[in-house]
Image 1 (tube, rainbow, N blue to C red):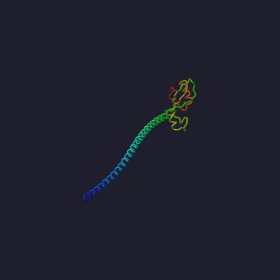
Image 2: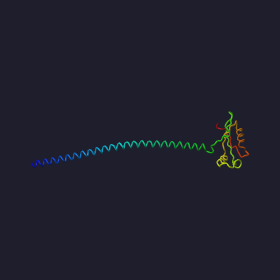
Image 3: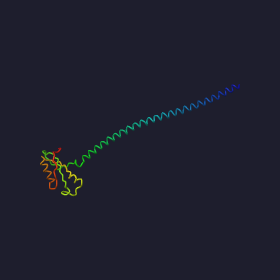
Image 4: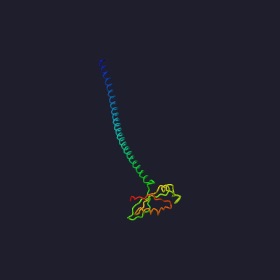
Length: 170
């Protein structure tokens, strides 16, 4: 009987140990399941953030490209503006009276002594433009008439010199 008692006691200890082991296994399974769910959640979150990162990288790349294109266009526009506003590129209109038979003539007029002979209070930029020569658009039938119109407005005795007369662009 003693053997049966020890056998029953051994069986009971084994059953309790087995139940404890099963409880540990179930807790471990729940912990593993929770960790697996957290892992899946983190993977989904990383995947979403990765896709967001790729989309933002594309947007940044596109924005930089647009910026570069705009900067190129801005530089081109600034260069064209500087060219258009260049002092030696200006053309003055002598008068706008013309007949259908008139042609456009570009006459370059200079006056190296403008300050002494015409206006001593003129700005340095304007004096320099007279020294270098100003271009005027003149409407006339021929070169001789164009010279006459310019000479009437800018006479020789005040130091004005006609440097060139060319058939105009119009």
